[in-house]
Image (cartoon, rainbow, N blue to C red; front, side, top):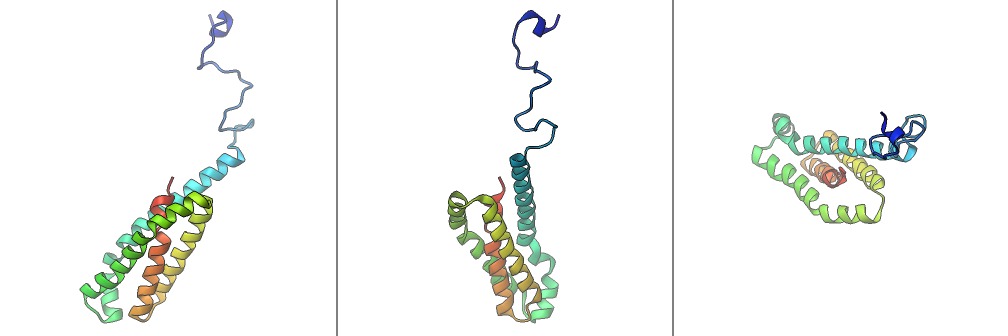
Length: 149
């Protein structure tokens, strides 16, 4: 005997004609849900990049020592602290941006800033320009942790 035949109701039995709150009538994601998923995917990818940006100095340390003719303490102090100070100082403003501006706009803006900073750092021929690139990259990555829903 089927629960429908007995007149009892159950949450597990659904009408085949009903649509899911997530899926549309054809079984596809609704446009709003698709946008939410795309935002989550982009924010998660940016958060993954954020982790790599934190750790990249140790990987390219030898190249930085040779190219800028400096010592490891200078590289760690200048490039490492520049990135982390910019990253840390942006946490509260980025939280406010997420509350007042739409999250996808904040993630797009800050990921763009991070990309510009990475390009400046990669093409830098002086310590000052490389440090400026790291600061821009740190500012951009400031939304990476908060932007991942």
